[in-house]
Length: 478
Image (cartoon, rainbow, N blue to C red; front, side, top):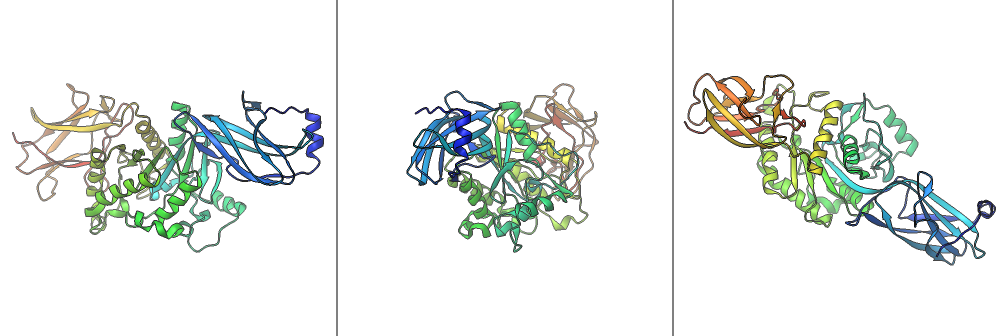
C-alpha cells in the first residue's frame, strides 16, 4: 500500500503528539547480516498510542531508495505492533523512518534510525592482542560503513578502542564494578592510553575491497586461556567467556559471516600446550554449532613474540605456534596469519602500526586474495647448504633489507648449533630461501624459523603476508 501526504500536513499531524516507539528489531547504527541473496528482512516490534498504519521509508544520502518509500509494514489498533520490511538490500548507511499514519491518512507519529547497515558481521574473540593494547596514537579513523556492537549491548560507530570491558553487560568482563552509564563509559574510554586493535583496520580493508559494510562484535578478554573459553561453561551465561560470547551472538541476530581469533599466549605455560589443539578444535566446532553454520569461517593469528628473560615461564611458546601453524591443515575453513615480524608496543602486545598490517593480513585470508600467505612446501639439500621451499603466497619472498633473518638449526636437545652463516631469498627460486651452512648438520638436527620467545624474523611475500613461525622441521639426510 502506498500512502502520500504533503510536508505541511506531516508537520501539523506530528505536532498532535501521538507516540510511535520501537522496542526491538531496529536501532541506530545496527548492522544486519546479509542473506545469500544480499538482502535482509527487518522484523520490528513496538508500541503505538493510537490506531493506524505503520509505513517505512529507507533512505540513503537523504534520498529514498526506489521501492522503499512509505511501504506499509504493519497495522495497529493501538498498543503493541509487529512489522516486517522485506528485501532491504546490501549497503548503507541507511536511515530507516517509520511513520504512524492515522485514520484520515495523515502522519501522527514518527521515529527514525540512522547509520543502519546491511553487510557482514564478524565476531572478535581471544585474549589481549585481540582485545587491543596498541598505543592510542595514529589510530585507525572510523568509517561510516563500519559499526560495532559495543560490549554494553548497544550499536555504535566503530571507534577505537573497540573492546571496552569496563562497560560490558557481563560480569566475566566487567567484574563486580557497577554498570556505567553511557556518558561515564565514554569519559573513562577517552582517558585510555592504550586500546587500539586489529578489528577496525580489518573491517575497513574488507569494505574497501568488497564494498560490503561490516559490523564488529568484540568479545575478547586479555590474559585468558582455552580452559576459560571452554564451551562447556556456556550454561554460566555472562559469568563465562563463552556464555558472554553466545549472548552477544544472540543479541545481533544469531548469524555472522565469520570469527576472528587471536589467543594462545595464555596456554603456553605448564602442561597446557599438550591439550591446545584439541581444545582449539572443540572451540571451533562448538562455535559453528551455536552459530548454525558448520562451515563458519574461522581466521586466527599465530602468536608472535614475547620480550621476557624467563623462558621457563612459558616453555610451550613455540609448541603453541607450531600447533597453530598446523591446525588449518586439519580443520576446514580456517586459516592462520603470522605476527612474529610485527613490532611491539610493550613486552607482548603488538603496536598500533603492526595491528593495522595484521588487520590487512586477516582481510587477505577472509577475501581469499591475494592468498593466505607463504606456506612451507619442503626442505631440501642444496649446494653449500639447505633450500627452504614455499608454496602459495604471492610467489615472491622479500625482506625489508636483503638479509633474511629468523632461521636456526638445532640438535635433538634443542641447542642452537650456529651452523647458518647466510640466509637469502634464493636467486633461482623467488619463493624459496637458501641457507648457507658452515658444516653439515648432525643426524637428528632440526630447522626452525622463529625459535624462542623474541626472535628477529623479517620474511614475507610481496603482499606483506609473513612467513609463519615453524619448527622443528627434520633436516633431510644427504
